[in-house]
Image 1 (cartoon, helix red, strand yellow):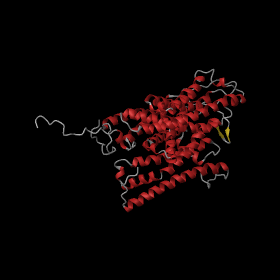
Image 2: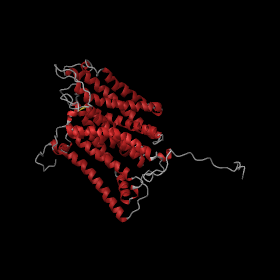
Image 3: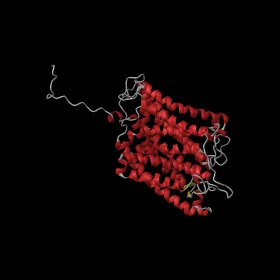
Image 4: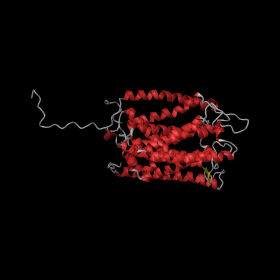
Length: 54
Length: 432
């Protein structure tokens, strides 16, 4: 549910529950977007990257 | 052991795997049971929940027990991630991939079971869009889904490190980048796990009309909230160790250094030890204060029925709680093969039994004067659909073990001993 949904109420329950959900999803989304975009740039630049990362 | 098979180009370099036919045969055997579960799953979806033995007493039944148990056992992933990425226990790098895989299987299984349990999976998204923000189960659904996303993110780099996929530059970079910020994902996962493990316990703890489950607590959180999180963090690593040891037995290989296993066992032992002390205090307070305040006595919860006696409390707390804690805390205990096996098996049984008690015994205990104990036997469809994720897990482990570099020390630990050096003193062949 998003704040512009007709069911949304600006109370503590909605803010905490959905705020937490969107916060966690944002971290995961931004993190993955960073990894994917960086990988795309590295690939286009033709970086080797086989330097071992473990 | 292995010969050059059709899929050898996909197998990690230097890894020794069984022939392809053997692998496919094993998949087929487990897959047959899996198909039985799939058949039962479709029966539940097409014919409805009348296929189960759930009723007005048992709205939660075998599935929810299995759900809570595998979520607890899958806790090894979040706790290992927490120890490695946030506490800095770098030794766990030898086991973290497998912990992630086990966690991924446990959580995807939990979601699959829930998809069957809701009866109408097409409406599964309602819990997100039409959320009841006063329900602990809404919070469980949110955290469970997000944590499954975290586990998927942690599992993806492992897939991308497959020998062939890793040759693709983009996949190689992506896996590398994901490893680079894995600590952020692991921290998010630990946060999410803390809340959903806790809320699963909180559900039983807030049932003020059912004194068997009800507990006092802090603010809105009953003590069961904290005990569930604690027990998952304590016993989850034991399940990770158990599955690792089983994999080593089946593959007849050493996959993880003893030092890593012992470290995790030691931490798990202390966690179980502290958890069980808290559990004993909680049980004592509940039995002597909470239950009498509700007008009942503890003996009423453990008598006049064919199954639930005091034995279940003793088995959970003493035999499957105190005993594994003592074994794992002691250096001699955790470093002996028999001791380690015994402790991790008991710990896994203990946490599963705890979930059984908190889900099913809660519902079985009569709450009205004219009520009697409500016993329950699952239908074959429930049993089949509960075995379904077990088979799925076995198959995913088999595929991952065969094609992905799950165990970074596997080659080193299984290297053939170097041949004896040839010296000048060796006698020359007679016909030279």
